[in-house]
Image 1 (cartoon, helix red, strand yellow):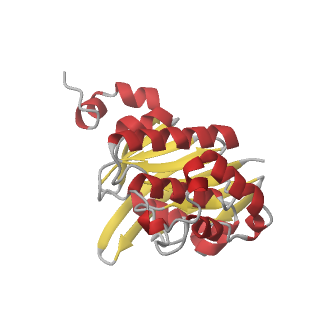
Image 2 (cartoon, rainbow, N blue to C red):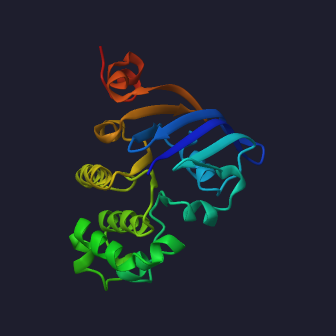
Length: 244
């Protein structure tokens, strides 16, 4: 059971505005790769390209699953989800007038997950006990941190092999950010998930990532394993707040 994502030379635009410039990165089975950068530098656009929500103007996105290859640039979002790719979108994008449990059940839309609804629901309630307590509460009445838990759990309801997490720290207090990142690591380790995470909180992202790619104005300007990122002088100066 192996999965690998190869993003090669991807460019993408919104009309005349170029959002990505020849972006390349890869993720292998069981890795957590962080796409690091401040707002407006293309992180979310790359996520949307992987999910088929934005069509690249050049390049390829190849997903290998157990030896079979799929060009994600030629598939619909539904087809990509059916391959076992799930996304936790920036801003959570829940259905506020539906209950916690109803939001979770909507996450089990893909065919392969429907037969596992009972088990996956039990798993989500085990991973996030608060959701079990509030299964009948309307999602829109929950706090930001609780909604983020629900958004992650909803993605897990699809039994994903590859999990994309877009800006999990947005709108959360420092304590909730730390708790959310910790929970992502627990879930990834426990269920051998492969994770691509877009995040602007460098310190938190590097707690759980194996590799980091820094994106500036739609281009990858530096990439390495996390330990090398931490020791890079420019990274320490501009992103980690370390002065000489």
